[in-house]
Amino acid sequence: RRVRKYMLCKVLQPQLLDLPVGARFLSAQNQNQALILWFEVDPEAMLVPRAFQVLWTGSSIVPEGATYLATVQIELFVWHLYELTPPESDGA
Image (cartoon, rainbow, N blue to C red; front, side):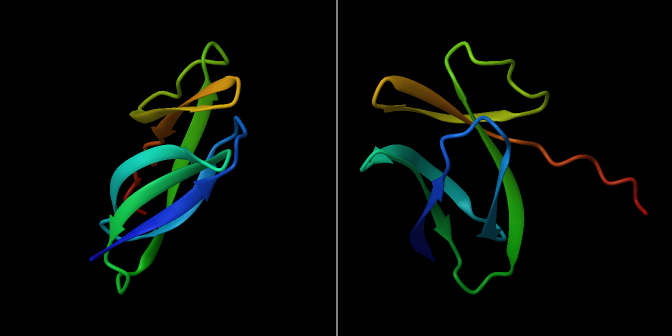
């Protein structure tokens, strides 16, 4: 297993990251004015898309079923990071 870093854009729309299956979130921080996420991953595992959304304080309502991960301050903004729950499969 390895620790890998990934960058999210500072936008309010949901964003996808292709992460190895089983990737475990470790931290989110400001690195050189960028929003960086660190995950513990198996680099040999298949990649799967996972959805994340950042919101600034007071910007909008947290999406239903989202899981809070971290808060990061970058310049004047305070960003709140959530992982979005994938929609339930209908078995089709």
